[in-house]
Image 1 (cartoon, protein in one colour):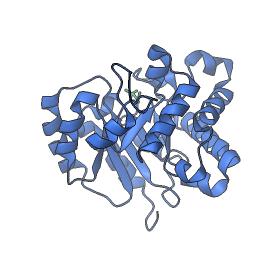
Image 2 (cartoon, rainbow, N blue to C red):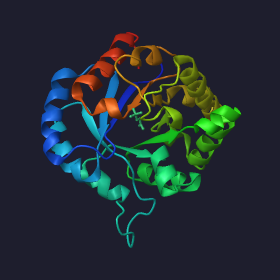
Image 3 (cartoon, rainbow, N blue to C red):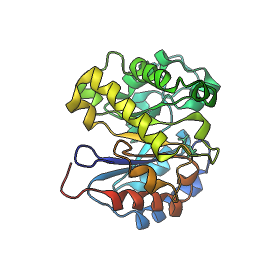
Length: 263
Ligand code: PGA
């Protein structure tokens, strides 16, 4: 983390877990455990039907509600899809786009991800753009090229002022839900690479303002070592975010690493 230049972001991703009745007790506990600290953002990305309950339960706190996906179309004949305007209207502030599970199980291409990112910005919400390589790609040593391409394709046409309202998450697919975390050095190398791509596209000032998160089996035990890396600005946390006690210990790790007097 480098809180001189950018905020730390801790984002939970519930994926397809929990029910409406779980939301209120979860929110009460997280609010007790993760009291507001000035310079970090905490949010939970919940399944669509849980959004209204989550917005109600976190109202008046500094914990925001995110969605896990969005349609690339603004409205109309898209059975089963949810538009960016509907998410904004429901009180959503952040939207995950291009999660590897969407790319893998729903055939999302880089150009679809680009359109989703644009749709999220169009409604004034913050996209969390996910990129990351498979194990096979890492074994071939092409993770750098692959992630560079994903970032460039997803950000295509995005003006600098909107880049500054974008979050990127590096999530190696081999580390997601597997209990196999990237080493702090591997996470740093890839997050720094992503920032160098941003620098190339938008210049140094814009690049250093964008939070780049790590995701993939982050937990209370490994969070601090990952967050200590200068280009790892937070976490996108799946499994460990389902329990407010565990999630709050990750948030506490970020709080311990904050540089005073910044952002
Ligand atoms: P995990 O998921 O923390 O359960 O590995 C992370 C993610 O996919 O966002």
